[in-house]
Image 1 (cartoon, rainbow, N blue to C red):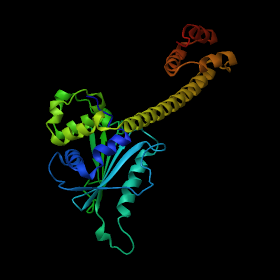
Image 2: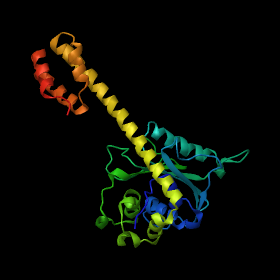
Image 3: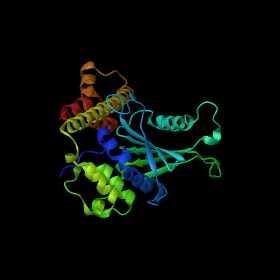
Length: 302
């Protein structure tokens, strides 16, 4: 048995965004938000307006909006690529969803709490080791909650989750493992199937549950995400290389008290990021340009 990648738009919506299978997102949200307590009893998927594109050619995130227990709104978003200003967009979407609840002359009392759950396929908080982080409005010094904490931000950082199947303990563990590793499975693991909703989600995620046209679309979307990530990685590498190159060239001018000959500078520009880092360390021991030339002679591009 083969499974599709649930971090792709078509699959994500099919698994979590169907009112006919709302027991799946209910169990998922209870596991992530409420430590598997049955706080959420009912849920309604809010379908976006016709013609609104939530993912595809121009976006790198997958989203589902749901009304839970009639008095809260949950935004479930899986961000597959770490794009610039992601944090600002999180705040914007949460605030926008909260404010747009009112129309015309409706009073503020009608506003309902918004829980914005962001599943990040990358690390967001380098100083935080926990997989799940929660943010609410608090007083800065005394850290007590604002009386009307109507917007809550919850983040799940998938790369920080390293548990294997045998190590899964909580229902949240199992759901996070499902999101991160389903596409690598070949059978239905007993530890996941023990949760009926996850077993159902795995059956939905089976390739047998998708038409050939859907599988082609999934492959197309996955390739697009891969290409976007590759372009971003390349751009970041180029930016890093440019910064390191500029620093090393300035170091050499100060070290040798003269400009670098164009031929030598061109050789330096051909170095990889790692080689530039090595050169940055080595230049501190150079006594003259001959040392630099000798180093370049023995450290050519692999």
